[in-house]
Length: 580
Image (cartoon, rainbow, N blue to C red; front, side, top):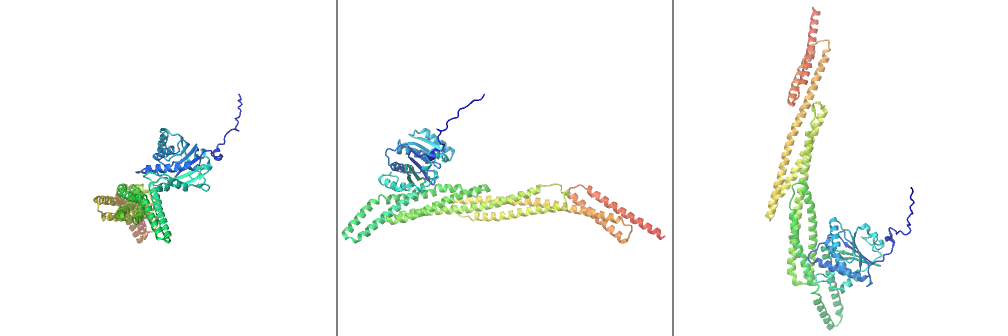
């Protein structure tokens, strides 16, 4: 039975890629992050992030120039964010935008567990908008591709308008919380661009970077204020003294008004920065170093130690850079607030001493770890060559059936393998004794460090001792095996010589004459063959081989000699008969 089906009318089907071409009807806010790292929330930083986000979002809402705007779509790059910050971000969006949001798209974070936690938070929290987690590749399926900019889309910001200046003006009118200064908020925004109904904002979430940028902007602002004040005073020098005095009075009043707001707050935060750096060096940094204060007992342990220590060295170098920046800032505060010179100098000296001592300890220990790595590499190389030698020693077959060339090659291979093992041992011993000397000469005021270095010295010495014993055993095995091969080579040579003597006697047997010289030669050959048979018998007994071959050769030698002797006697009898 044939069934006829009516074809579907495809004229009303939508274009699968219509989002690429249609004009966006809703406003779009794109949020990405500069140098994305996992966000941490130390003391007061949660308040800072909340103030930063509310300031940015309120300005974005104001930038649309439409108080009745609705159905806003927000796209967030959450690939490097943790659960805590995503929750703060969504709640801040709910508070700031109220019911103006229609859809929030989250680019799925890296890590399955974080994705599941965020999904659970979205289900548990009742937001006024729909929240969807999508992948970066599927963004054009939901949003017009022409409205996207890097990192969400393929287009740059050449056609976009920078609205960061209006954001600074917005902050001048907005009062920040008591924990946060506007300089930190301005420093936390690296990009703020607009194109039609689409806005792109890029934020900084790393605490160290935020503090650095905020302090730089503060110092620049103070220097600008001082410069403008000095410039105003220079312009007022041409006016009469009364106006000049009034200007000075006004400047002093301005300074008294600005100083409590700018200098003390910045000075307090600068001192807190130095104190926090000292606390990290003495606390978390010291614990990190203590966990790596070892030289390892195996090649894998030392490699992991070397890798972790290099990360710690990198972190310590960052601490040194931060210490230099803080020290440079101290000079500025000493010139601005000379009454705090003594306290600032003491705190700066303490910070520099702790940081430099910390870096010195790390680099000194890294040198020990490098020596330990070289030692364990050489030790590993020695045992590798030793294993190769053992493999050759354990490979035994029927040497009696080997040719002379094969026996010579086997002896040469064995001697070369032992030579390589011996060279690797000497290299290991040289590196090990140098390392032990450095451990023995280690000086420290800390008794724990001395005891730890003493234990490490004992462990390295024991490993060298074990390697030396292993080398001695391998040497004995090689000597026994080489002696056996040399005896086998000598046996093969001796038996070949016996066979050659028998062949010579067989040739003499074909002679029809008998002379005194020929008789002498036969006797010498026979005696030489007897001596070779004695040597062959001793070698076979030493090698624990059967003596049947030796008996057969002895029988052949005696038979051919008896035949020659009988021929000689017959020839002598015939000669005497002829003479008679």
